[in-house]
Image 1 (spheres, one colour):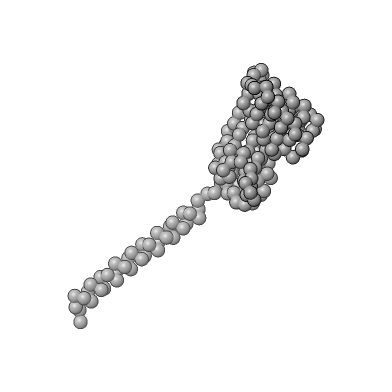
Image 2: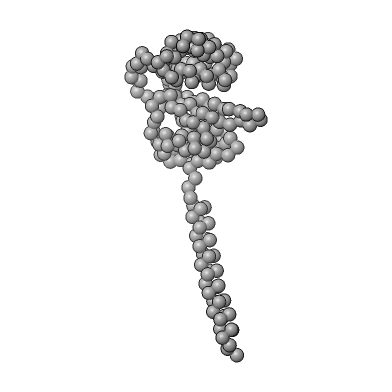
Length: 210
C-alpha cells in the first residue's frame, strides 16, 4: 500500500538521513581543524609551554603579555630578533630564560587577599658576556638615567653596589619618569630588605624635594 502519508514519511526520512550525514562530516572537519591549529604559547597555573620557530621575540612577549595579563616593559629598545624554542610545562621564570636567552628580566606580582597575580615583566639588554653579542649603546642623554646604573639597581649581584645605584638614581627623577617607577617596584618587590628600604627612602627624598 502506498498512501500519501507513507510517501511523506519516506521523504522526510531520506532528508533527515542526508542532513545527518552532512552534520557528521562537518563535525569531523571542524574537530580536525581545531586539532591541527598550532598553539605557539599556552600558559596555565603559572607554567608555560612554547613551540616557536623563528618568531620575533617582541611578538612572543606581546603574546605572553596577553596570556598572562601582565604589562611587558622593555628597558631598552624592543627587539625583533627571531627566537626558536620547544618546551612544555615549565615554570614561567625558567621558560623566560629559554625565550629571552641572556637578557635580564624581572617579574613583578601583585596580591589582594589570598590572590596573587603577575602584573609586569621588565626586560633589559643582555648582561656582558652572556647571550648574544650586542652593539655598544649610544651615549645616554644626561637627562635620562644611564643604562648601566639602571641595570645595577635592578639586577646587581652586590648589595652595596645596588644600594649605591639606587641612591644615585635620585638625581634623574625630575627628568626621567622611569626612576620613580623602578624605585616603587623595588621598594615593594626586591628580595633583599636593604634594597627595599633604600628604594623606599629614595622615593621619600624625591617626594620631599618636589
